[in-house]
Length: 149
Image 1 (cartoon, helix red, strand yellow):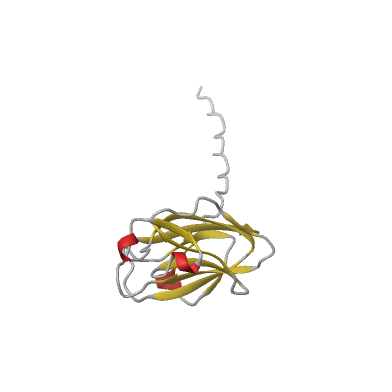
Image 2 (cartoon, rainbow, N blue to C red):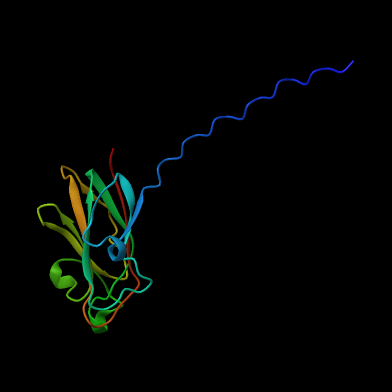
């Protein structure tokens, strides 16, 4: 006599992957304010154009920001140098990390991303400001952020 097959075991419930976060770019989200707990921000071009400027603001609490790549003109002959820090360090093209009260945390250019992350404790928003002048261009930047939920 035929025997009944054992009952099928249901497949395990899928585990929820952590949210991937948002993908923002200066090119597509210029002037926007976006609420997010994690994401990536880029300039948005394969090679950024001359004479462009814009800001993307992230609304989130106690965020941590790290730059994954930077290839932004320093200033003509210093193109292949690396520079981070004050506005004097990046007179031509730059990406700046700016707090809600307009305090500049850092202004970055060159070919090496900052070697540390920035913990923005006590702040509920921050911005990425990008600027290029009318001369040389580069590949741009990529930064990641993660905020408290």
